[in-house]
Image 1: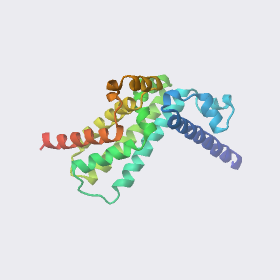
Image 2: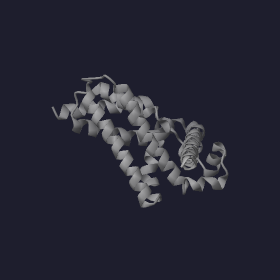
Image 3: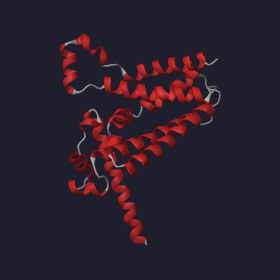
Image 4: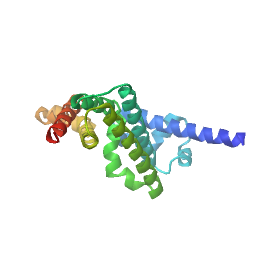
Length: 216
């Protein structure tokens, strides 16, 4: 029994090593689109074929990383909101913007998850992702509602906009090397390479204030 427990712990550690390696590479290379299984396994110190024991594909690995991102966002929100009460819409927007913006890889993955990752894994893996992501979403919404003067519906609306805007803005603000080169050649096209965090903060602030105003 002890050997079996050690085996389970070792497998969990190897899985975590692969996730951490994928996240590190995404940050270093400029996005998850540039991450390869070969690079991940090398960074994690595993043989290339060994990754199949933990993840069936690159898509499954990245979906796992997105799932972990949901947990990280939930934990950040909970930590920031500890002992907070009566926050106004602008304060809530700042909490949402700053916490999600601090998770660069998660913001990157939001687009890839919706466009491909969920559909490129088997149904049971997709079900697990949906279950855990939804649970984290509900915990974030509940914590924000309890700590603020906003209603549950207003918080749900703000989170929906936050996820959509963070996903889109992150991609625009982190162009591929070829696009970045193009923007240097034609500077007036570079307006698309937005300053991610300030723009996200501004848009979520406007959204939160607007949601409260139209429901007043």
